[in-house]
Amino acid sequence: MNQVAAAFSAVHKITGISIDILILAIIFLVLGAYGFYFGKNKLTAFVLAFFPASLLYSVFPYTDRFIFLRDTPAHVALSKLGIFAVLFVLMNIVLIQLIHTDYSFSKMGKVFEVGILSLSAVIVIVAATHFTVPLWGVYSLKSGLVEGSIGRLGEFWTLAIALAGVYVGSR
Figure 1 (cartoon, rainbow, N blue to C red):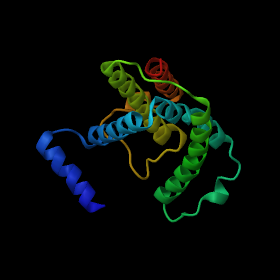
Figure 2: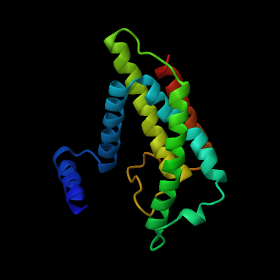
Figure 3: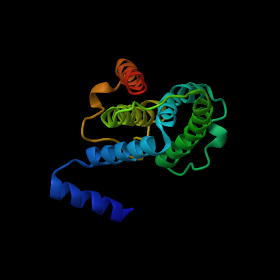
Figure 4: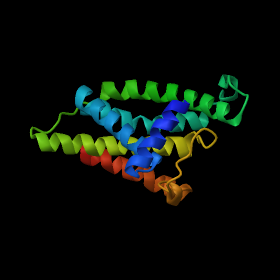
């Protein structure tokens, strides 16, 4: 893990790009590749699966029983993230079966659609790690990207923007 931190630190020194932006850019590129390779319906399902998974997680009565790592607050946060991830994957599988969309015929249209859907997926990932299953004990964005959106109003608008991105990207 120290090698990864050293690599991010070296990139930050060379480019001046904050580590948070670099991490989000890597997630964006990975999700973009996922969208190009597997299709728009799977990327759309990925973004939309967050909403029912969050609802199920918020009412899941057995969270304490499935927390296997209790040594530190970071371990508890990672255990809770694992529970959320299982619910998320199940919702994603269901939604993939229901969503059928095709890309636009133009190459620029396809790039735009994948870009918007990938950005929506990054927003949902940030929302999941800040609102649904807070990972502050593990890692927290330090660049102020999320600072202005803390709170119920910010949570609402963050998720509304992600939904708007799904609408624009899946048309």
